Length: 102
Image 1 (tube, helix red, strand yellow):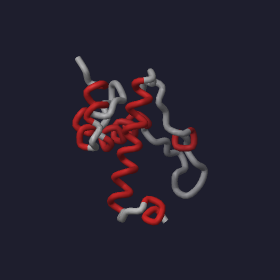
Image 2 (cartoon, one colour):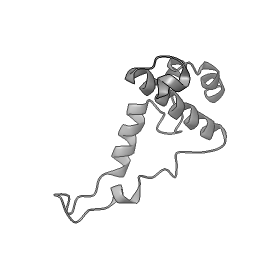
Image 3 (cartoon, helix red, strand yellow):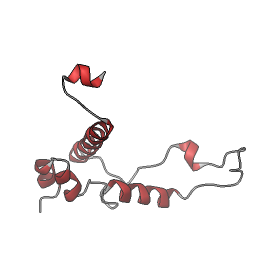
C-alpha cells in the first residue's frame, strides 16, 4: 500500500529508516520546544510487579532501562538530545547543528 501511495518502491529496510528519521526528528523538535528528559518515565505498567506469568515480585530498574534505551537510540542521557552523529546520519544535519551549537 505504501508503494502504491508513494509511487516508489519501499522495502522493509526503507520503511524502518523512515521511521527512525521521523522518531529522531520528532525528538529533536520537542527538545527545541523545551522538552527535557528529566521527567521521562516508563509507563506505569512497566514500573510495577505483575501478579502472574513469572514476574511476581520483579520490578524492573527504570534507570537502567532508560539508560539502555537512550544508548540504543544514540541519544544523550543527560539532555535527551539525539546525538549529532545520529542526526547527521539520518540527513538531519541542519537540526544537528541547531541542537548541538556551542
